[in-house]
Image 1 (cartoon, rainbow, N blue to C red):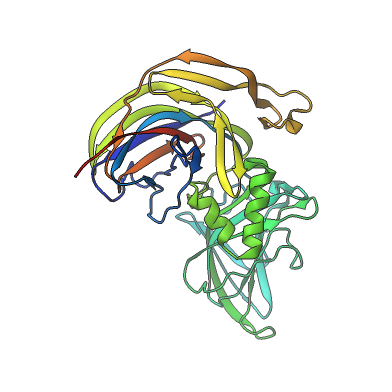
Image 2: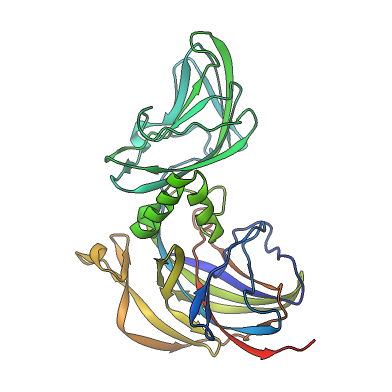
Length: 389
């Protein structure tokens, strides 16, 4: 099984945000358990890196006590969507020029109607009825007119980005109604139908993610409902919770992934105070949804070095996909244990965050086929020691 590397860090004493490893993916531990209120508190973010401001009175400080694991079934199902392999796996209307350079696909042609680009037949994945798909890409077109057609048909899931005379990131969620091939068609249209003109268009960082397979139907359906209510709100919900914040993820279909703690860092502002490398500690778990907020139930890594194993990984068994407390990719399954098992590993410092305005960062990073993966974990914290000014 592939392991996700996590660097978890606490920032002390200064406001702002932390930069780690030059724009690698950031993921915050979203679940903050307040023992005094007995509630899970989840906050939102607006900074360029995912972070959480301590949501308690500024006169209190808190200690990081536990790290909680999580797992997903990774499903970015489109190959060569960053065009690193040139135009391989892509096709264009006859008579239209197509080339790729510096991870950008360029198409040039003359038409009075439209021409289009799509995935070659042998590389088209099959969508699943009822599944929700995140579709995102950067595009620009000299006529400012393009249709994104996931199934190749203008009547099914058509998305029409706007303001694309310059390079623009476009994202939406497709609710698939019938099992079918995914064409990833981009249809570039003339300004006025019937009037021929030259069209130049560019595309890069094209991804299609099966949200239902990756996150489960409850989360995927909730995100889709948000998106149908207000365009962009479902995608904002995902990214506001540290999910799918990168522009591009390389192809990986139906692969079970879990978190792994690899280091513990502490900072004062931008200054690294301590860096403790750890033997990788895999933390498995299951994401959930509670009143519109992301939750996580998983293995717990305590600051004293004990790891409470609430989940195990085993070979797939028939019927695993129907288990309430399991995640499976059809090859391996992560399932909740009837009785937790406790192991002992490396302790970590219970780093305190002080006097409000301070932040905590969790950094996931793995390179597996040039693919960085980010999934969430949770934290349980204790509040202690009132500070007097």
